[in-house]
Structure formats: C-alpha cells, structure tokens
Length: 126
Image (tube, rainbow, N blue to C red; front, side, top):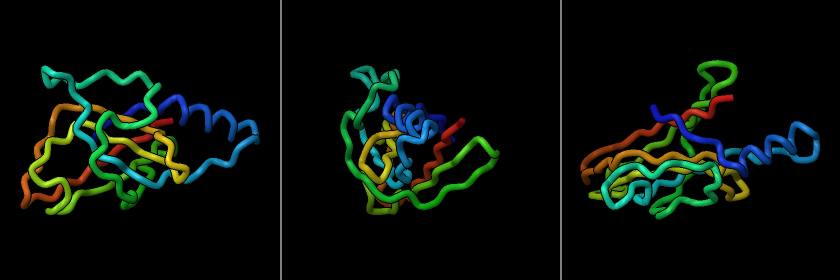
C-alpha cells in the first residue's frame, strides 16, 4: 500500500468545495508511468505542484474504493497480463473526472512481466 500526496490542485478543489463555491468532481482514473525515478533510479521527490505524470504510459478507470477509516479513502486498480507488459512502473497518478491530477506518487521501479497481474492500492488521507 502506497501513501501518496494530494496535489495543490486537489487541495484547491477541496478548499473551494468546503466554501460552497465548487462541487467536487469524482475521482475516476488512475494513470501509470515510468518517469518517477531519476537517472540513478532514485524516486523523484513529490512537491505537490505536479499537474501530470512525468511520463504517463496508461490511464484507466479506477476499479473500486473503500473507506478503512472515516478519514481514509483507498483507491484500488489493477493491471492485467497484457497491460504494460515488460515495463518498469515508477509513478502513479489519480485523476478526477475533469482530467486533473489530484493525487501523485513516485516509487522505486516495479517491473511487470507479461504473465503477471498487478494490483495497486493508494490511500487518500484526510
């Protein structure tokens, strides 16, 4: 399970929604990329200012979400055998239905063989 950072855009939308000036769009997509590490394969630090993945490879709808605690939402998604086969994944992004990056995570490279299924679980903590 990976903890991720809420982006500035995500915090801005929450602020405006709390004030009654915006209805929050639904969290809808997860994107996978291979741009989350530097030339030494070290995860690139997250600033919260990200608006996109550094190198997005695939964007799909989120499979499901749960609430393990009242202030935590866990988003789950998976890659099938043919999805990103023989690719190293090192970044994930959660996007709302407006297409804006709301949650972002970088991590060490995860290699995906062509006969493997991958499941990802990210937490949004309030």
